Image (cartoon, rainbow, N blue to C red; front, side, top):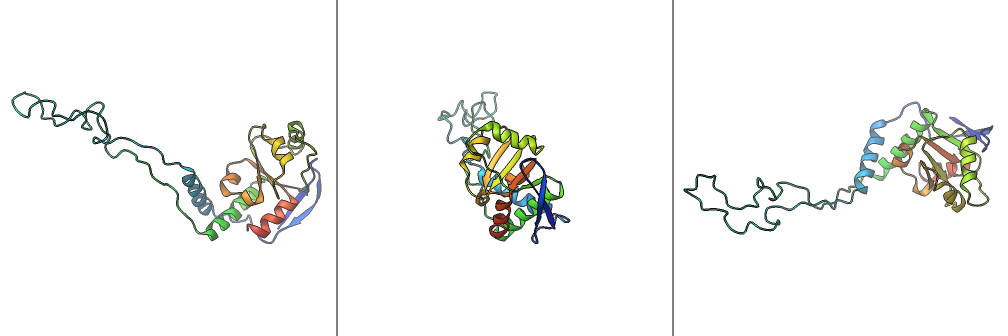
Length: 205
């Protein structure tokens, strides 16, 4: 398939041919698996509640067993008492799990194909900013008719692009090596340079 290559003024200046991508059929279930895995791996799992053995108090029987007219009780820290322990509450745990590397590779390709199919993948010839300046990045995005959230993919770390984008709401900059399925699917548009596209296909797909 062929993708249009644009300049920063949104003019079509060429075509990019790819043999690895086919947006005609997107496996949504594969994308879903990897996104759920990514979110699970981000969880800290530091939540914790106290059981009846961990809350303070309740060391003695609140009243005698019989002849009070009240229900028998063994501790004021039993779960049904106010201030009592929690039954089956969350405890610190590790939510992370691994997926096959091949599955992640397939999911990345499917995510890209989904964006291409929905006309949310924008390929430009180059993205050069002479010095860190938010106004320059805003102008480029405006020229490309990009509003809302956008993921900007560069071949390597570009400090000028990074610093020029960090104060713009909804704009995230990633180098090719750090791109993941969640980043792609959680942004409305994806802006990628030709060099980054070539590197992405060669190393990640």
